[in-house]
Image (cartoon, rainbow, N blue to C red; front, side, top):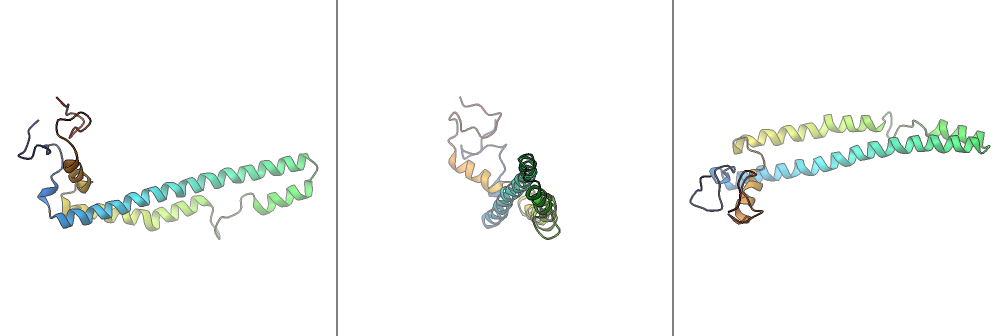
Length: 150
């Protein structure tokens, strides 16, 4: 492993100092926005899964109500709720698809395009934080997975 003049730096880490700090920070902020949207998208998929699970539970409840002798109520419940749209004309999978196509994909593309200002490197801002915050040579503070503390 080759060390630079700063003992915290390692040749295998991205070199944030090769780029304008304001640019690195701005691209890092856009990456942060993408990470937030990734979490939001996960919640949207969770909404999709939970809503589908609830739809089947409603159907099961209707079956149980029918078995308990409440045929009319069960039939109305199924007719009104099972398979119902969550938004006008949309089931949850369509909401997820529209979100992906309308917003998520666009933000991902812009974040990727912004990395042109940092040599295409991802998480350059975080790499700089790692360089600043880790203790070189200390167990658990390796610069890369291959580095071993001595």
